[in-house]
Image (cartoon, rainbow, N blue to C red):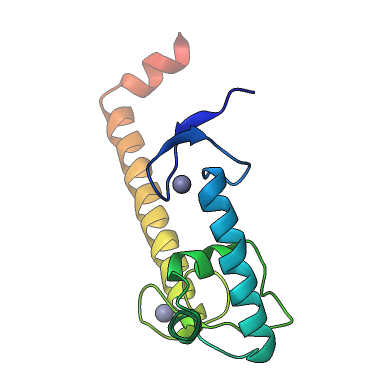
Length: 135
Ligand SMILES: [Zn+2]
Ligand SMILES: [Zn+2]
């Protein structure tokens, strides 16, 4: 497969690796991940910020490792909820914000459905509904 493109890390035009980066960045990334992994082994309960400060590895890299499930279960790497900043270990939001968003979605869905019902009634009132039915 011809997989040439710009590396998202350094912007260089390159043949991408499976990770989507150029081979140089990929190698560096692997090294960084090793550094982070060994730090987390010694400090199983650390925040992304702490890891970043201790290892100098970009937070982006650490987040990617979290997303890839590198720290699941064994370790508790915490990072702030995207909405309120509470320490969380998985997903993007804390449970509270997740609930709130879920509720918001349900609320707006309920509202949408109410509007649809109303529109249907309006249409029926104008005689369009029956016309569609007899077609
Ligand atoms: Zn690169
Ligand atoms: Zn939150």
